[in-house]
Length: 195
Image: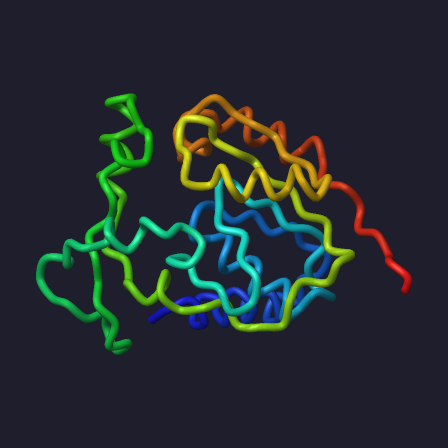
């Protein structure tokens, strides 16, 4: 199981539930998934929020975007080396400390809920099509974790909105009220572009 399966799953849910004008929020690897969904079904998505997440272009994988990442995902998951039915290698979840989590309670909570992940999720390139240029996008950056600093800088350079939180990679764990406030404050309205 890899990126395409996760995109298909979310897209299928939006279609079955007949959802439109949805704001998708993707954390970390989830940025790959929401970008793929919005590229394939822009009529269902009103905006994207990348919560300390990958911001790919078609043809890029997670490993392409964070070059040191393949060296981190090296420990096979205990009890098997293939995900159920998908044939992909499973790797152990990263230790919360490696993701900037310095609070013992947050780290314990995250460890208790972490599961192995298919390596293919980060190897598989994002399929096309590209996002429409009119799609509103926002980046929420977690300052105590540097892996997505370049993505935030690209947003800044393009004049796209970036909010910053002084926290580790899991802002939704350590700063849930602040994340909720930023989301409720709104995402810029979708704009129509003319050529």
